[in-house]
Image (cartoon, rainbow, N blue to C red; front, side, top):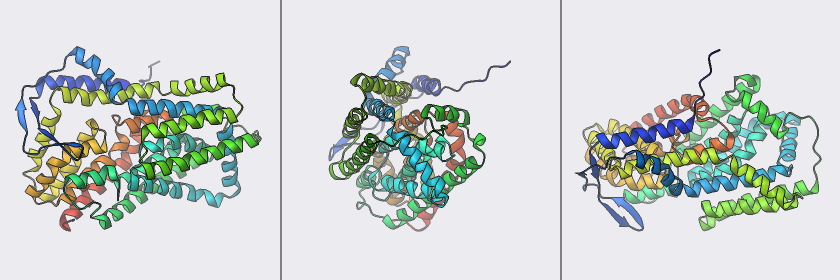
Length: 463
């Protein structure tokens, strides 16, 4: 009997590390000069020069993932804390009983179920569009997956509600400070200018993503075996006791734990909006939530510790993938070929018609996003070059910002080098190859929409 090939994302990512290291022996070295403005390290557009390349050998390849761990420590530690905290909360039984109650509500009032996906995805999209909600979706994945399974959907639907909801808003950013704010600042545009057109883009992005997820959810509801996660989800249902008709008693302790969870979410949103909280603060909040819920749930201290370790252990594979993904960028930077790629892209665009130039900017930003998986980092790397380049080819700088926004937002959810994407898939236990095949169709549609919207931006002289 022929053995079925088992796709391994970690192997693929490390193969890319090796491939990039090989390129450092072939591609000539080059670099832009950098300058610090308002605390941001920006490239100087006209400063590129070829230099001696620095080929990366076997030792560099082996060290790069270690450096990748250090470079991505903030998101890796965050995943460990989130995984551990939710395992503790889950051990109290509060999440299971809450999902059971919600599922019963939707079963008894089926007309409400059709509003679940559009309303919740719109909420997450608003978060992505306004304050750049991205890493913050990670805790919600662990909430919506069991709810989706209880309602007859699959874990892909449960993951899509928070993750793709926020991603749609991210792609249609209206006032996202990490995308629009930084990019427009570098391009010397009025902050949050061009808002009217971006609101239209947000509506298209959010509406399209909701329609896709609802179409898929209806298909799975009708025939669960069509889900690429069917076998995995059957096991997950048993683990979460979602296939059990036994009613779990709703105790006062469960109610207190759920109240604590709601309070934590409110504090999370307030902290982000009012105090600019990020990974460290959010991680500390959920660490405290896990311990508090464990005590309220009458778990022994040893049980809290064991469950926390078990939840964190589940994130080890994702941590390795993130470290190797970071290693790709480290190899490119150390080998002096990252700036060469950016310089080559700018040369290609400089001879194009404005429509094709805007679309090539978008594609180029998507390619660069594969290696530089930080919206603010990518803006500081590319916009000092793309903004003046837009002037040369007859584009408005606002259109150059839009091309960057699309390349960062609509392509990120499918990239295996994105720490957030792989973190979400790790929490959801969805293999990247299954996610890629599932998302490919909507990715092609959004890719086409982005090309069309950029052409419109050129024709209306988008300011």
